[in-house]
View 1 (tube, one colour):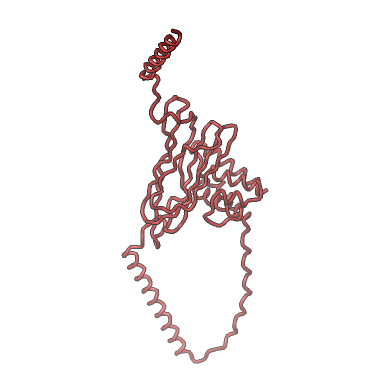
View 2 (cartoon, one colour):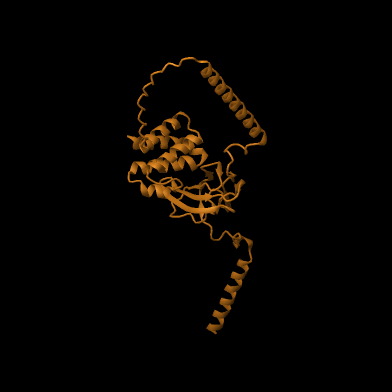
Length: 298
């Protein structure tokens, strides 16, 4: 009799669970079950060169900042690079009292000429503000790939320009021929030619000593302070990479591994944040880059 009562009670409990499972209030949104809750403050993409030639390497960086301290951000999905050759993929994660900063740098080499737009990088998470599943996306980035022999910032030399150059060359040649004829006539008419003392050639000035990597960084820093535009920022970042001892085209990880001075590594990280950090914090990142570089220069 006791067993029968227990069986009836179990059936009743199962029926209650079945009714609860059929209620929409207990059904979680599809695809949201494995998402983490995050405060996503920044998600942006940037390239270090807006125009590149075929065979030239460049970097596409994705920057993410969340308020939570997490060891990794596997939710981040990088964009499809299409026909471009992926030479390297480096992800740098740093944590602070403000949360977690992630910078992923793709080293790319274009294979086809033309304009290419990278689709947005994105991550899916539960938005800590709205408590709803959300997709956070960066803005797409456009790069122009120039064919061999094409000048950056312009098109190939047109037939009209070639014609103009040819006319100018012919004019110069005619002037040279006239000058040669004039000299010959004067020589023919001359009765006596006095020997002229050969001038003593002044000793050639010694070549200026090549600038040291520290001097290159100091010059780039002065230019960046005067006009902190993208070109000056790229020049300063390139000189810091060279000062660390890495070859052109190296990644941030290579430069940090090669740099033995902690102050130089701090300047490298500040340059990366100023180049690829969120636009809202660019002024602060620029000041941090100037201070870090000046500390390394001493």
